[in-house]
Image 1 (cartoon, helix red, strand yellow):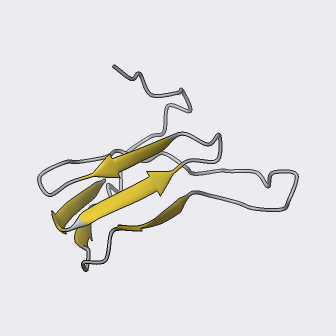
Image 2: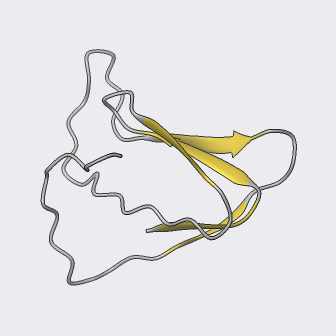
Length: 74
């Protein structure tokens, strides 16, 4: 899980879906076992939004099992 503590962070998945996370938000990422796309890229993109610094915490779960299902959006 990604947890922004300061600043705004974006994460873009391999299918092009993009979310912006603010302090207090949380995102569960299950991009394990990814396969290269047509350009050879594997995984997601992430970075800060704006000019300010971003600080975030990543939490990993040793016993978590990925569902490999698309997340539901609002």
